[in-house]
Length: 443
Image (cartoon, rainbow, N blue to C red; front, side, top):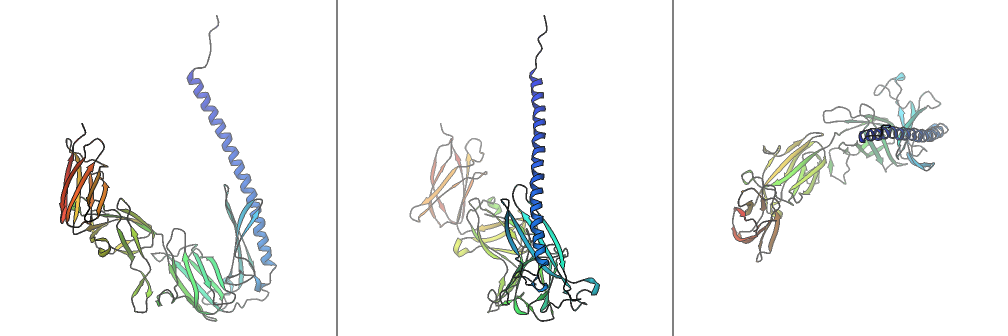
């Protein structure tokens, strides 16, 4: 007789695994090929669009080479969205004057507008998105060009005074004709030079920003009577300088709770105000106008994350008249007493605990009668019909619920938890009252 040969279960598993590896490789190669083809098609189209815009600039008169609403002003659109082959391409054009080093540089060079540089950036979205940029220089027929107007020198630096490369710079001025509304990128040292800016008195609104960074800008009298950094003025033949300071943003992780001796019980839904120390100017009465000031509310767990904050020194306040709470202290780091204001450095997240107190409070702790272990998620209700007070809180992981603020009075107490008998009773609350209730298991 011939032996019966067959496949074992292990053989089948190994064969299946090999097939999966082979087909996964084929699929990956196919996807890579599709990506290469897709990017190649998109890139070819993008190059064509960029070349078209470059040729358009070359065919304009030298005076016409510029963007609508830009410095220098001209006939080119700053931003366009063009659809080709069912895909949308964003075409962004910038034109700036270039100060050639052959005849000296600013400030020794009295005529820094030697020629214009046109940059066309084309980007596209989708599964295989990308982007590219083309540059060309356009020179006047004369040896040098008289741009007219004045010149703006913009510097953007971080918290340590180091230039921020490729910072976004927005410039608007509706008081000149044509009006200016343009975006530029600072160089690798955080600088931008704009010769040929039309003369205008305190009308150039300039903003410096970058993704993930804070924002700095100029201010007008309509925002603060006496701004520390007013809108920029440009005078004929003179240099106007403006500097801006931005850096990566940070955040506060805020908790509102009772005191340490109470075990830091969470206090939910507490409104608080947060204000930085930096000012943008003064009002008509000479009072400081702060750059950052906002109001917040912690959640049902007494927590809140406040993000996108500029590096600064921040003060937390709680309105006692509106909330019934006294802010008696702050901790940052947690369990470390801190004085206000609390410093926040760039790209840092700090935990802050705001410790609150009221004239009357009630801390309930619920435990198992036998094990004396805290019961999590027990429903704790206290109410007083005459006062119109009726609140129910779940116990936390420590078996606690904190009722604050309260009026001095007697309250009805009901506590229930799955698998336990319901507890009822009365409690007189005056000052800081605490009670531990041991629940009896259901029969």
